[in-house]
Image (tube, rainbow, N blue to C red; front, side, top):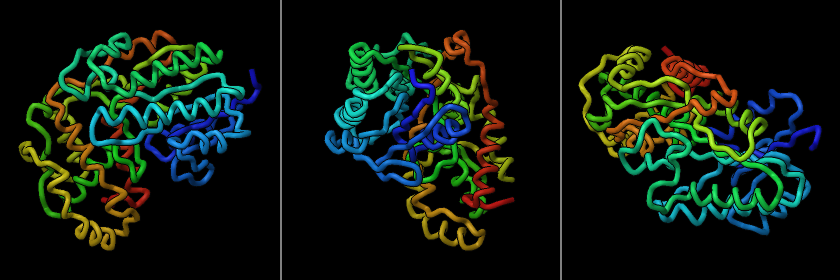
Length: 343
C-alpha cells in the first residue's frame, strides 16, 4: 500500500465533487486531482465517454483512490443507463492497471426507487435494487463489484439524501433554489410561498450537508471494504415547520402553499435578476443560479424521503449536522460571496 494516497475526484465541478476536493486537501497524506468534462484549476479535462481519450489522460496519474461523483443527465431513466455506466467503466478501466486500492461510488436514494414514488422508509442499505430496472446506479455498482473482485481493490457506495451546498452552475442545488426564489420574492414584495405539492409540505424529509458527505465519503473509502452506506445529516424535518424559519431568515412573511412550477414561473425572471445584480452587486449570472427543475422535483415529493443511517454509525462514522442551521450557514455563504443580496 502506498504511503501517500492519491485521490482522483471525478465530477470535480459538482456540488459533491468540489467539497470533496476541498476536504481532501485539508488532510495529511493525500495528493488530490480533480477530473471533469470542462476541467479547471487543478483538474483534468476528460470526456469519460471516450475510452481511448480517458486512458490517455490518466496515464501516469497513479490514483490509489477514485471518488466517482460524475453524472450525465438524459431525458428518461432508461437513457441514463448507457452514458453513466460507460463513464464509470471507462474511468475504472483507465486506472485498473495502476496502484488502485479503492473506488468510491456516489449514489443516492434512487437505488431505493425514491425517484419513482412512495418507497419503504427508513430505507436501509439492504433495500437497494428491489425495483424494476432501468436503474443506472445498480448497473454501476454491479460493475464495481465485478471489477473489484478481479482487480484486487475494494469499493464503497455512498448514498446521500438531497445534498446541501453552495456550488453554482449545478442542476441539483436545493439551497440555491430556495435562496434565489426567496430573493426574487423579496424583490417583488411577495411573501414566501411553498411552491410544491400540498402533500409535500407535510412529508418527512432529510438532507445531507456537502461537508458532512465529504467526511463520510473519505471515512468509508479508508475504513471499509465493499460496503454501501447511507449518509445524511441525522435529523428529519417537514417543510411546514422549516419553511417559515427559512422565510424569516430573508425577512419574509409566509403565505399558504400554492403549487407553482418553478420552471414556468421563473422562466421570465432573468431581466429582473440582471437588475438585481446591478442593484445589489451580485456576481452570478441567472443561468448559474437556476436549478428550477430540481426544485420542482424535490417539492413534488408528497411522500416521506429518508433513510436509516445507523449502519454508518455502527461502523464508526458519528458526525451529524443540524439541517436548519445548515441552511442558514449556506445562505450566509451565498451572501458573503455576493450570490444573493445581503440583509
